[in-house]
Image (cartoon, rainbow, N blue to C red):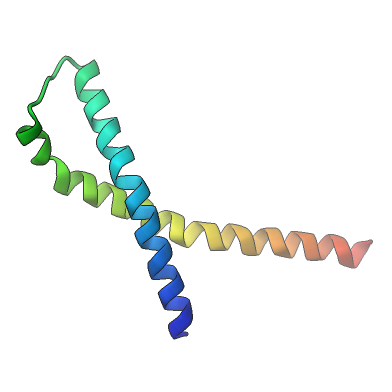
Length: 83
């Protein structure tokens, strides 16, 4: 159980490290498309919201990917049993 928790924690941190820059980039591009030009200090004020959004996305992926993989494995096993 402890090993599984560590693996999920590592996966969460990896997803978070990937998601934070992507969400920050998306917010910046959206602001630029809307005609809003922010200084870098003003962009730093958005970071808590960016980190929160990235954390939600990471939690979703950490929970959804193992579920998807387990469903895929069950489907493959079902094919082997029939064939």
